[in-house]
Length: 261
Image 1 (cartoon, rainbow, N blue to C red):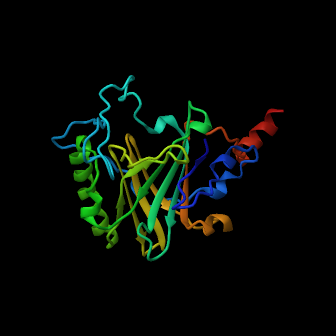
Image 2 (image 1 turned 45 degrees about the horizontal axis):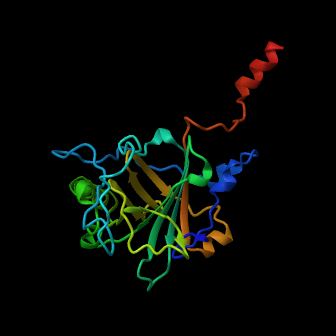
Image 3 (image 1 turned 135 degrees about the horizontal axis):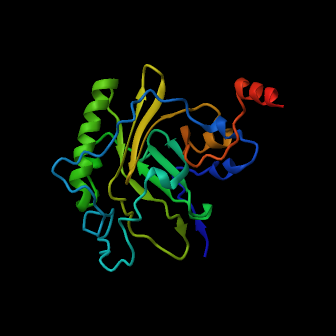
């Protein structure tokens, strides 16, 4: 059995190269964002948690099976920032005339899981509100829609532009032996991406369960191979709680060490 990643957006993945010992990963980090990091799901009058259990609107083709027989604690499996070592956010432009021009990919390294089990999420982006509303799991639709309305209005007011919107699904790759008739949208996920005319950089906000992240998508330091796959910008989130890189000592630290000798 052979497994290949989805080919639409093109995958040149640098994340595996970011665990080297020479601390060169700084060059991949996006420029500092001017956002206020207050993004959260709007939950007025809505249950605070939702987990998809299957419905006729959770898919792109055929009804999905109910998860009532799932063995395990779905609530405990929810993603949050503490579980993340680092995450690579990449923004793709597949070119004019393509049916799904803009996409966002998020590759996550989890703190307590091996790198070969790192999840990768993809969102197709649209400005069409009716298209965005499709296939959101019914169990979370009210939460997602209420949050999306709030964010869309806020971004249009602050940046004077209409953002692209999307929901995430897990990239499970393609297999010669397995035909997947539909794509399962992850519940309680969304992403907004827009171009900031003032700073001339793409910006975004994403939510994947309990992880909310505001980011800028820097085009600097992109490799030719990345550009060839359609990447317009990227951002690397490094969780300071799990950051093991050795940072250079300050002048004051070095001076204190010299005097202590």
